[in-house]
Image (cartoon, rainbow, N blue to C red; front, side):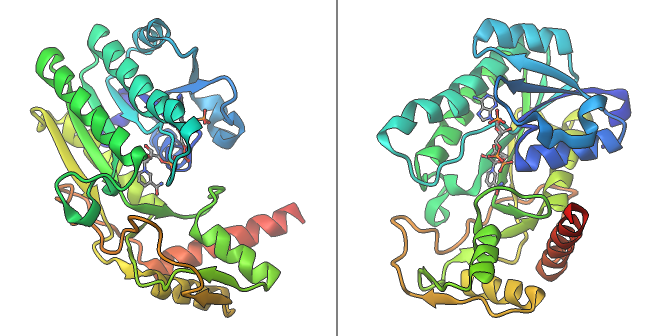
Length: 309
Ligand SMILES: NC(=O)c1ccc[n+]([C@@H]2O[C@H](COP(=O)([O-])OP(=O)(O)OC[C@H]3O[C@@H](n4cnc5c(N)ncnc54)[C@H](OP(=O)(O)O)[C@@H]3O)[C@@H](O)[C@H]2O)c1
């Protein structure tokens, strides 16, 4: 980030996939990085940068959050913490609201009280089912939209300036999340064919380094004083592909046929067949093609397998 070495930065969600990579890139850029975690957070995921950042443990209360933000006194906050569930059960409602609305609102209240004015927030393309200005794919996406409504209050009353980055799918090395590529690797290793939908849905995959670069560009935009209220941008590859095409591309990089039984199960309810086209973040463009990104991901896991012996 231009001049991030001069600024203190606060990050939520640093133990998540995107947050972890963003934290590493900020530390590499010599940022004075503070992160908010909670009891039970997988701090080991921060790996070698653990000693170069300041950890703050949130106890779940608004007062606790106010204390953290006042102590850290950051110039800018990156808010990535969130609970993602593609489908929820009855017992998930409280967790979704707690992580995605309560925790996020506590953060804004604490920022307003500590005179911290700049926020990069994280949304999802799934707030835009069928390309609509608002139509949530699921309850998770609805909680992201609810938080955007709360942001408006703090923009108007506390002068907080916000850039919300709406992510599509991200992928890259060191991804423990139970997502597509992990599933495909498991199939290849087991050799047992997997029943999937017909596979005609479009997916927009952004390589992790490109995704974290978007956060840095958004932060620079806020730090330069360009943002007057709340801006929202899509972090899109610009070239969505059908699931079938992505699986074929991954098989090519792995050098093996991936045994899929296409059409062996129906599409999900509210399956996202076409991707949303949102405004692109000025000054940002993805640099890593899917072929290159997949190669990097596979090379990384081969080298870490070798290191583990
Ligand atoms: N990755 C994608 O493809 C994608 C797509 C669209 C949108 N997004 C958005 O991008 C952001 C990052 O995604 P990700 O895939 O990196 O997420 P992730 O791997 O699922 O990690 C979630 C992070 O949020 C933290 N968190 C959740 N609830 C919390 C709470 N109540 N208090 C404190 N921390 C809490 C987790 O901390 P613990 O270690 O304590 O659990 C973890 O650090 C999220 O806002 C997500 O909604 C991601």
